[in-house]
Image (spheres, rainbow, N blue to C red):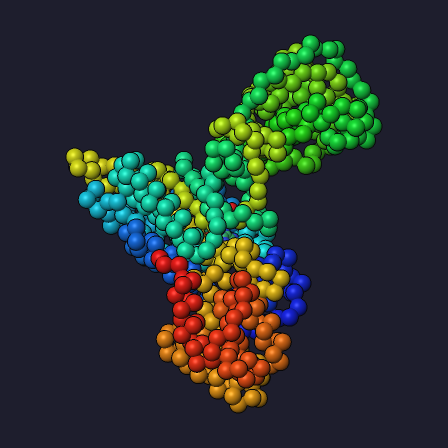
Length: 570
Ligand code: ATP
Ligand code: MG
């Protein structure tokens, strides 16, 4: 490919719309352009990289016996009503009506559609296990589309589904996908961690996220260096640490004017935040309740919502005037509280603590569970934090941030049951199919690669993903010999099916070299007058920045050799 004939609109400046390095570099390298919030055009370079990821995924899916299908983006509401998700998926689901006033949505995922297909076509245990996958566009009206391809409203996903006759088979299928995922990410050149995760609105009982450790990641992960345990932070179980409680002292109401936040109260009363109990009000479809956690702990909304078996749960940030008198926000506490209380287990070993007094500008000292109030329930409702111990082996946990690029869910009969997707077993008995589903975000994976692999000059593509393997840069296109040598190497490599970009633009040498670094092409062949005087051209590795001179006539052979030595075999 000749640079002068391509649409690779590189940018010198960092676009102000982009915070994240991967987003900045994809814009600067001319890979993508924004059309609307979370909606992107893929330019030739961007699309080439996307296709490389897709190719690796296809190969590994095919290898475990998954078959590719293509399901529609438009999905009828009836199917979503059958599983009940039409009502619970919320605003992320892009809904529309057709000309006959029938409800449809743009698919954010395809469990309903694939299960519908399989319930119609699969009859017998003899057809199982069955693995189907597709690479297709998904639509999700995200609350906060951002960070370029990381969180889009329209994005490419590989989604696969497994169908099995029994639990053992289904678990084996899950393992096959899990292993295939490790292979895919290793071939792509991404370091991922498989972490235990929540099953979210998709449901089911076993779930792993494949997460790329990166400071820019939106997910927090806890992992243990001792036993290898790794989980999404929101999932980490916080074991009860039992401690002896001191003798109870008398309850005392103290004046704390204008002092609301934990740190303020702690410093005003000269106690540690660990001696405080926070009372946080939440609302679900079933009504309001209070959650109690230790002052230095945070309520974990996911654990809490699950414990309450609520579909929707939100923080109470404002109250009607008459409610506000009884529940003065900032001063709410469990003593005499008229809403149900869920207390975090960590409170079991606390005594003589500080809480709000349900009266503006007042707190209680020396509150004790049992004597002063009784929670309606005890549960693990807090988020793990630095200092916490591993729930498996009790070593200290580590915390990192990460980008979720893939996800495996074991679904069991969640969808097959509601959609009545059954098969006949060997005894002729009708049973629900056992399912798993497995997603990889294509664009997010590319963004994660760049997040993990770049320097201050630009992208450093792993060879397996690079849009071009080699770039040839003739430094001065006015010199006949320079152009001829560059052209010859270009022809030789192109003739060997190497993806090679010839920078034949009439640009300054500095611009060309900068662009070559920005695009992250793994190997650069620089053809300049000075080295040509010795009959040489320069080979430079993008990743190591190592430079060596080779004879101009050997250049293409040297490039081929380098490519062979640096390719990761599938
Ligand atoms: P998140 O927690 O980041 O919203 P999710 O749990 O909703 O992700 P899944 O439904 O498991 O994601 O989707 C499978 C994969 O699709 C994810 O692992 C991720 O790589 C990708 N993905 C999900 N949402 C988006 C998005 N808005 N933009 C780009 N990729 C996405
Ligand atoms: Mg999501």
